[in-house]
Length: 323
Image 1 (tube, rainbow, N blue to C red):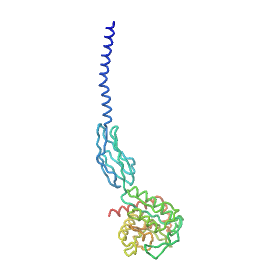
Image 2 (image 1 turned 90 degrees about the horizontal axis):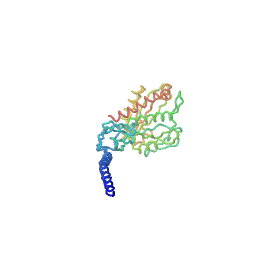
Image 3 (image 1 turned 90 degrees about the vertical axis):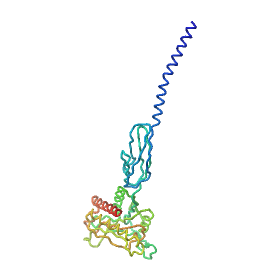
Image 4 (image 1 turned 30 degrees about the vertical axis):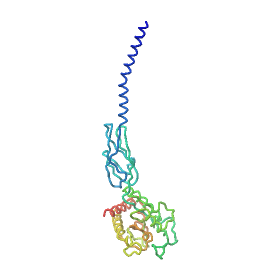
């Protein structure tokens, strides 16, 4: 009897060993599958972390442990777009994250898009003029009011400072979309910033050029058209900026009038403007039209016409850099 019990016990032991040995393969398979899955990896082998707006760059990635194809994505399509071949096109200044994914594996790279150039925009005037005086140029004994009150619409009664800011903010948005970076000397009407201070702000911002946005006025309601003012070669403070400023003035006024249909009054040399005389970068004053002219006054308040003005200025800036 004891022999029989021992025999049965031995048999059960043998069966148990067989079962355990049979499962070893399964456990090994599971472990192997887990390891294989853990080995899925994507790595970017060719990358760039800084790209200029308007430029393209093709990223390259390598896949290990999976036969899945790489898919590419970007965190903000306003900043840039990427194709499924890894070609990234930078559109406007900002920061994005580019992701390469294959199967369950992925990797990311952070990219900074720099603007093509930095543009300073100075919306003329402010809600209240400042009659305190300041030097019209470095070292000058001549003085003028820090900020004039500006003109206003003969028909609309809209003050110049409101029009210039409205157009300037739209111009900023349009320039950003074209890949430029933008610095504003003001972004609201209730400020007290002198013309000298505006010029210095633009100088110290790293801006490449400065566009001063204004509207004209005249005692004659028939006066019409747009003009661009720049410093002359005889300017006692910034004569060295005359050539580049005139080039900028010519590009902007030509494209502005082409787009809007406004009368082109041309480029005009002016050496009495404080905001120009304190500049250290190419600078112009764009007189968009006459607020003293009933027709132009009304037109400049229209969204559709403002869109044309903005596009014309942008086209002029593009043209300036293309030459």
